[in-house]
Each structure stands twice: as C-alpha cells, then as structure tokens.
Length: 509
Image (cartoon, rainbow, N blue to C red; front, side, top):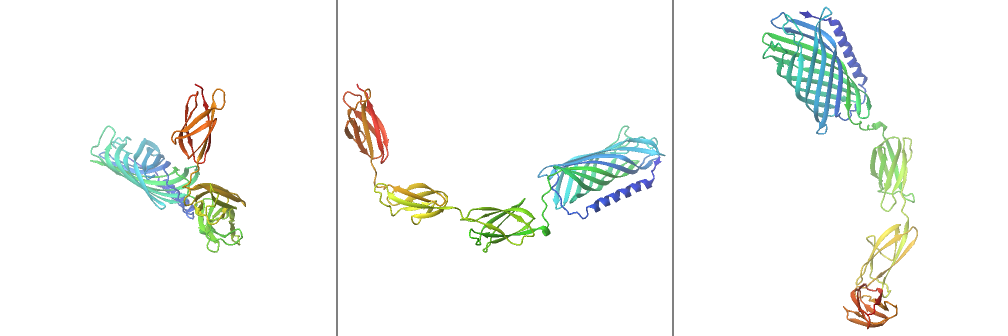
C-alpha cells in the first residue's frame, strides 16, 4: 500500500515559513542587545503542521506514506524554583491527529501523543543560556499491524530522555535551538502483540525565533516561530518501520520574569555638571563633601583645593546636591543639569548661628574664685572665661583639686551671652545640716517642754517646745521624751547643708 501527497504544496509551505523567520530576524538585527533577567516560569502553547513521510516493512506487502496534517498541538513548560532559579523541572505534552489517505479518501486515522517530564538545570554566559534536562519520555509511533490487512494501532516507546536548549537573547528577540535523544527502555505494542524484543531509535532537533510582543507586570508575552525535525524507527525480527516528521509552527510563549534593569545612558548623551563650593563670604571652600542624586543615579565627590568639583555621566534635568563641611551648616541645593550651562553651579555653605558662654567657678562656702578649676564643654577643655559656640545645649564638667567635681548643662542662644556660675564644694570641708524640732501636745496643740536626743551622737537638747541640733549629713534616730507624755522615736536622714524641720506631736499618758 502506498500513499503520497504532491510535494509542490509542502515545499511551498516550507519556503513561506523560512522567509517569515528571515523577516523576523532581520527586523531586529539593528536593535540594541539588552536581555532581561532570566524567567522563573515559561509556558509555551504551540500549533504546528506535521509534514510526515515513512514506511513499514514486514512479512506482508509493506506500505509507505507521506503527507501533512495541520493539527499538531503541544504544551511545554519550564519552571525554575531552586538554587537561585538555576534548577527546576520541565515537561511537554504533544498531541496530533494522524490520517492516512489514498486518492484523497481516508484509509486509516488515529492520534499520536508524545510526553516527557524531568528535572532541568541552566547556566548563563552573557546573552547565552544553556539548559539541560534528563527525564522520562513516552512517545507513540505509527504501527499498522500486518500490512496485508493494515489497521492503525500505534506503538509506545518508553525512554530515558536526554536533552537541552541553547538560547541567545538579543534584546526583544531570542533564538532558541533545542534537541533531545531518547534512550529506549522498551517498546509496547497493542494487542494482538506481534513483535517481541523490539528496539526503537529516535530524537528531535529544532530551532525557532521568539519575538517579545508586550508585557503586563511581570508577565512577558511573546510570539515564536519554530520548526523541528523528528526521526523515529522501530526494528524487530522480520519487521522495520521508520518515519521522518518536520513540524513548522507558531507558539504563544509566556514568561514570568522581573522588570528589565534600568538602561545605562549612552556615553554620547552624558552631561558633566560643574560645581563651585563657597562660604558665606563667597570665598572658595575646599574639601566640601558632595552627594548628588538624579533619579536612581547617586554620585559622591568632594570639592578640590580651589573649591571646584565635576560630576560626569548625568542626564539633562533636575538633580539635588547635598553639601557638608565641619563647622558649617549642611545645605541642600536643587540644580538643573543642562548642556547649555556656561558657568559652574554655586553651592554656598553658611556657618551656624552662635552665642557666647561665660563661666565663673567659686567656692560654695566662701564664694571665693576657684582658680585651679578645669572646665570642659562638650568634652573639650575651655581656655579662658568665655567661649563662642554654635547654638545648642552643651554638657559642662568642672574639676579642681580638693573639690568635688560638678556637672552642669548650658543652653546657647543665637547672639546671646549665657552666664553660668558654678559653685564647688571642698572635699575636706563638710557643711553641717541643721535640725529644728518642734514639740507639741497632740491633743491641745500646746507647746511641750521636752528632752530631745540623737542616739547615735549622744547629743541632747532641752526643748521649750523647740530644739535645734547641728549634725553632719547622715541617718539618725531621734528620741523625744517629756514627763506625762509617751516617749517617741523617729528615724531621720539629712544631707550636708540641709535645713530640716520636724514637728513632733506627743500624746499624754
């Protein structure tokens, strides 16, 4: 049995297809190469024609066939989810109708399926990506039983598939070259089984061009033109079948990837901005730290000894310059980058507002000046009685031999003089505290003549309603007694120099 279709039609299809690939490639030949980050998920829906030829030889008369069908459909996917999107999984499912005609009349028909699934890995070298996979493959092949009475049955090859892709990113265009080779694990025939110990060889090579259409968020839509060639064969005792299938087609290719990195401006478009750093008197200021921001561009530099600086690689438009120098107020200046600028942009720094701090140190008890006092303001030694400082709040510490250290805080106002007198207490001198005790009748409020004692110091005072004791700072027990009244004890704590008053109400017996 032999069926053949006219070759003129098929060759016309091939010529039109290859001309289309040539036009798509030429349309972007002048484009600036710029590839985006690798996709993490890619899904491809393909519709193709299958231009097929083959034959089967057995103990019967044998048959050969050729022709084409238009219903070759496939779904492919690549998902990279591990090792920074370098390792993942891939699968492909393909289904096509098979029709064997003679004299334009159908003789045999059926369907063939191909499937593979397995892990995949990839690596990038600039615009070139290499991908490889290994996995299980299931391929259905045409099998017609005994050709003396042929019927479409189909054989199934189970295989270990080894394959890979080479992708070249050229901006909006990607060239895709792929192939795989199945290592047959066995061939299964439908009942009735007529063959045993059969072997099968095959493979696939293909190439295509993908053109980016548009993007919605992270989803990139592309159109792909592709052609593949698949040779297959089955061999057994007294049996041999082989076929060759060329599949030209188109695919919608969807890729999930992040946004393109920002384009680097061409060197020809770059503008150099000249800056001049000056002080309040418009004199040049050297060593001024500069930070320029324009969009996502950030540049740091500093003015030279002449107070000048240049920033290269900018685009026309607004920019912000932040300037700082010790002893001056930080400044922020809005500038306009333009090719038409004929002079340097002025960056002026001003000194902060200042005030005067005046400090006098004296002995707390004698009010005499402490001449050996060392004064530090904000950690820096103060030389002289006056100091000019920027406005703000400053910690002050004073130390002197034979005196307790003193810490104070001074607030400096703009244009004002802050005068501060610091009293120091001598280490060897202690200022006694004075205790005043008032004794009253708890019922009538009348004054009571009583004996007042400090037990720790064994001091006594006869109080005619009032007693005064002088002690150094510390904790003491105060006991008050009077004839006809209940004796009272009270714990008191005083500090050096305190003036403490205690009211004692005594209850009659």
